[in-house]
Length: 491
Image (tube, rainbow, N blue to C red; front, side, top):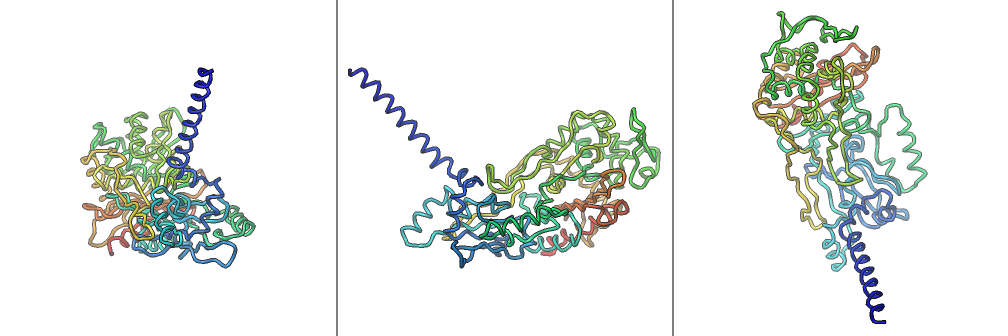
């Protein structure tokens, strides 16, 4: 009898231990993940009973805040300059999945993060009303406004960042939208506004800076190709390649040409330096061919192609970047086209900004971020930006050489419209093809001052900026990039 009791007691004890362990995991280790889960409508409903923390720009200005509501819910979310910041903030609404910073940092903003437990207890003891933490972003309001205005009526995106820290100074996507129309306490009103936005042919809800269908990079990808060529030790800046006006791809009837339809400068050969300066396709196609697919793929991965960068938050609700694509299993013609940013190369503007930032930062690529700090209601700091290295794709020597080629491109080459008087600018333009008769995608990326960069920018313009195939990156994208660079330099 005692033996049977011991067995039963052992089973009961084990069941108790299992229950204790599972409840501990749920209440301690999984609380943030569960609170952030978009399916957890109870957590979302509860968040309306406490004042949600504000979203602030890098100067402490209010971008989004919760104000008292006159309906059944205690607070209403309100967005200042809504279209200007929509790509960053996203929206917070009733019983639906939140987006942008609102979704990624929901646990902090709603006051339910693990780190806020003792602060909440203190509020209860002192009789204070519960309140979420404020999230201060790295977004510089002057740079954000400059990027937004410079983009004008174009469809596209701008990303500006500090190459030394990874802090994103501006992130704009156009066309934009008003998050206030979605931050409503009526499900029917939400869906009416959401359906109108989601059905729009211009797709304003897509953050083109980090997501969507991505873009062919065209010649801005030559930064990666040139970096791979020099860093692998196979070539130098002065390595020369055959310089015809057109080149037939091996085993095909397809000819590739430089953007101007002519040879890449004078002479029977063209160097890598000249190819970057004048943005020539044929030499870079030969570089990719001679490097081989494995080397090209290796360096693309080093720069972050295929990696899902996280800008804020964690887990399922994180604000992340759609991974850029450099294709594998290419044949020789495909490899040659991918070397100058065509074939199946697909990128986000943030990835192009990171490519430039790596060159600007001496070969070191920083983890990009939108979060400067998280601030408790009592003004104590929960979390502060700590710059983090993502990778070191290339050596400092390679970065310096590529930087010099990009300086030449601005000073007396294909990126001339990015020149700033009294400041040395490094830059690269791109004019990407999308189909035989489809409008081009226009690009500019660069940084300044070239010898000690404080800002990197990437600009993409869809539909040829309204000019179909009659415009190039230097004509439309480069002046926008210049304006954004100046906004930082003039502060």
